[in-house]
Structure formats: C-alpha cells, structure tokens
Length: 187
Image: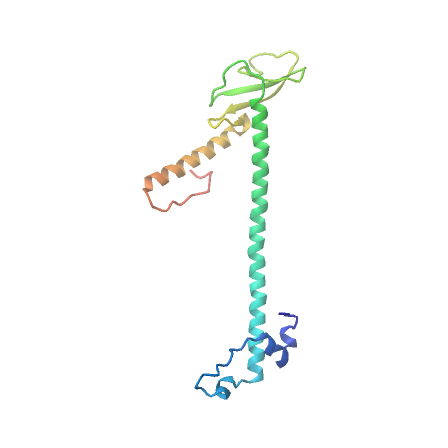
C-alpha cells in the first residue's frame, strides 16, 4: 500500500484507503447503519494516526538497525584484531629456539643478518649481540599466546579482573545473577 500522502494532504478518499475499517458482519443482529456511521474527520484522524505510527515505527526500526550495524562494525574490528594477534603469535612461535619455552617466562626476540628470527633467554642488557637486531621481549602466556613486555601490566590487570568476576560468580552460588563491574581500573 502506498503511503505517499502526508498528514496535511489527507483527504477523505485517501484516508478511507489508508484506514482499515472493520468489515461488516451480515449475520449480525446489529443495525449496520448504526455501526458504520462515521464522520469524515474521524476517518482522516484515524488515517493520520496510522501514518504517524508508520513514521514512528520506521524511525524506531532504523535506530535499532543502526545500533546493530554499530555492533557488527565493532565485532568486525574485534575479529580483525584477533586475526592480527593470531598471526603475530604464530610468527613468534615459528621463531627459532634452542630451548623449551615455558609459560610465564619472558623471552627476547632477535633477528640475525640472514633474516632468521630467534628467541633467547638473554635480554639485550645481558649481552651484546653482534650482527643481530633486537626485535622485542615477550612473555609466553599460559594459553600459549605472547604478550609484549610493555603490555604485561595491562594483560595482568585484565586477568585479575576476570579472576575476580569468576570468584564473584562462584561465591554467589548456582542460579544467582552475577553483576559484572566493567571498571577494570577500579579495585
């Protein structure tokens, strides 16, 4: 059904098309003239209400879809970040190494002039690598991901927050609602 007429342009003819009136029941014992009597302005008002509801519903629907679109964009950005982290972790795990890496330990990445990347237990301050470039220091996490040394404090705060949330859930017992405080910096 076309809804091109605006509220100001509604005439009785367009209003009667817009307003869905109740069909008459021929078996009814009620006088049909009594139930079908209406003023032209009543029909126009009814059509205007329908038109207003259509506009409001369209606005509300557009707003809700906009929120979902923003969430999709946020999830896409998070997915891209996860893929980027995964590739970086894979590259770090592929670096040459002559020892068994243990979670919780910090290792130092170097690159030889040949282009080979390798891990060492020694930091640049502990020795003077000749013909090699220091690429960064990383902590191997227990999930086997890598955290750059400059992000360790942030990572530890996140883990602490997660542990606190888990403890609250465990302390609350089964079936209790868990309120999560997203203020990570708040102790």
